[in-house]
Length: 146
Image (cartoon, rainbow, N blue to C red; front, side):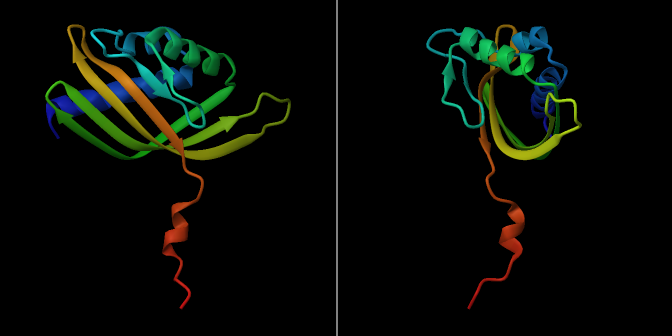
């Protein structure tokens, strides 16, 4: 793995750590400024696109403020770097807890793509797109009816 790809993967881990810990300051540090036609964009699973750095950060603030517990286990991580742009694709295996008196957990899976851009301040997150997986991959293993 290249040094740059390893750096991107470390930034991606920081992104998920910021979500898990509700650290909006860290999240703010990770996102690129809107600049020269480059506009931060975020598609949360099930949402319409959120554009503009301020609106993207506002969306994360809302999610963090309304999330009691969340944990990510990333699988199928693939990183591609071309010049000043890097794309990391992965599967987010998510465990969340409801904000109730009872211990209620839910699990889900999201396929995510994060695009990073090299800026004067270093590599920054430019675009995030998460899409929920609505059916388990296990269905592919079942024999086809003949």
